Image (cartoon, rainbow, N blue to C red):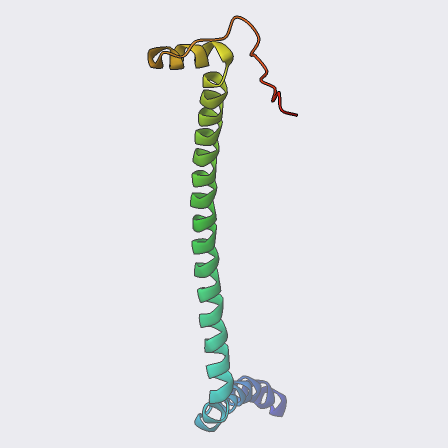
Length: 112
């Protein structure tokens, strides 16, 4: 019969041990640790939000770079097209300038 009493009393002891572990004195004693854990949690959450924001910013920058690259290529091709000899002749014709048919004359100084 004494064995039955011991078996019945063990669950009660383990329950009371649990209550003894989380009492008021334990909580007050560990407040700095709990504050440290909460600060770590806040820092972890902030780091996640900061990373997401940075990824979005990088994506928009890459998009802008691609747009500028396309614009650069189109302007470059237009400049190359306009700098061809045939296009230059068409562009300066209204100004009265024409392409030379004979080579230019070289002037020399006769006093030397």
